[in-house]
Length: 283
Image (cartoon, rainbow, N blue to C red; front, top):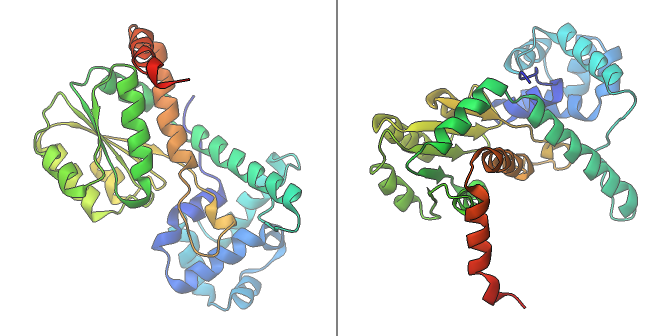
């Protein structure tokens, strides 16, 4: 499975944090009015978004689109390809049933897009590096720390020595102990965390294999990493202020874990020993 091109929405979500205020107005309008966009002219979109036509062109370029016409063509094509399975961003506590369906539909789409962007050859190389590593360091700050904790737990469970720490200074100090036999997996929504960039620089200097998990393949963190896994997030559909969903990142970790479990011959013996060690803690 080769990686597939991102959808228009995913391109917008990836670029969102790097957009200027006026460009975000366009992004917000496109996200919430895809059907209308198909029938609009660039001047009509400029009026609706209260921006200039030149800003729309810059917005399209930042979202890896050739221009406004390319934006419309791609949205129209994606609507046809969806076979009428539309998703809504409406959430209303007075209509829990429909809200749950809307959330489910968007989360499914989020996961499907994340998987579709995975490159088979890159994944194989990542799995090989992890399986043969002396140890794996998971690195994260803020909102992605729970993902790193989950990753280290899962990897240790199948016999892949892994470390993670919630204290940034400890993460950084540990990076100086890395060798060419080690792997670093850095997890970041934007891929622009200065702390993680510093850690990846150290890991690269120590000749460790560096892997990043981000939503932006052109981010500084992705550029500094030897391998990169790109994920899709759809939280902007639900929240006015951008918020990072950990669902896609957690799934990337789950995918690596399951593939490693299937590949590693002694993984089940490690899992069994781990489970046996906790028997007395269960009723």
